[in-house]
Image (cartoon, rainbow, N blue to C red; front, side, top):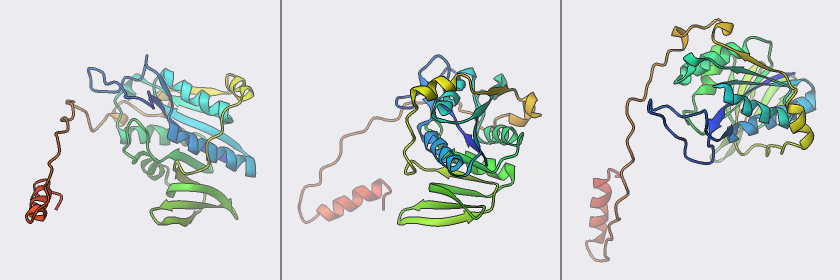
Length: 255
């Protein structure tokens, strides 16, 4: 079974990312790591190949420093990786990123693509579904458990009331939530082995894509600080308290 996991290197996943003068995230020269949400997808992939055989391949897009995210996945147990890096990709939006990742995944046969629900530096939550559409495969989202049954995909999809059971033929794409199995901690042996695992680096031209194909359709033109919170309003108890509270809610357009 060939499982592909879409992973991302994110700057300062536990802190506040820095914006450059061009209003884009500063990804080089700052602390960064494999996106914490992607670790759950890597763990789900490893459990599948441990149960059914096969290999886990990591696919990512980003600057050279993004190899750090792939190495973390290798130390967990992934077999190989592919990084697409190209100066033309700086500032790529979700659609451009989806085009690049789909083109990278298509380079080799695959049975299943796994991804986190959303990245901690973008939070669009749209990328995996866009990749599935470009690959022409069904997608199942918010999976807390991923299994194979009779050669088909079986997913427990997390809902507010519990979970739904979703099935789909392979190949398919699944997004994995943070309520899935806890990601394993890399062992010293895994960390040492990660240094020798194959990592291929490709440019846009290697994927048959041009700069026009990935030109962003959205750009950040300005950034301003959020307004500081003001003191709240205290409504004293009395006959008109309910009316005052209702007026405040109406002013805030809450009702």
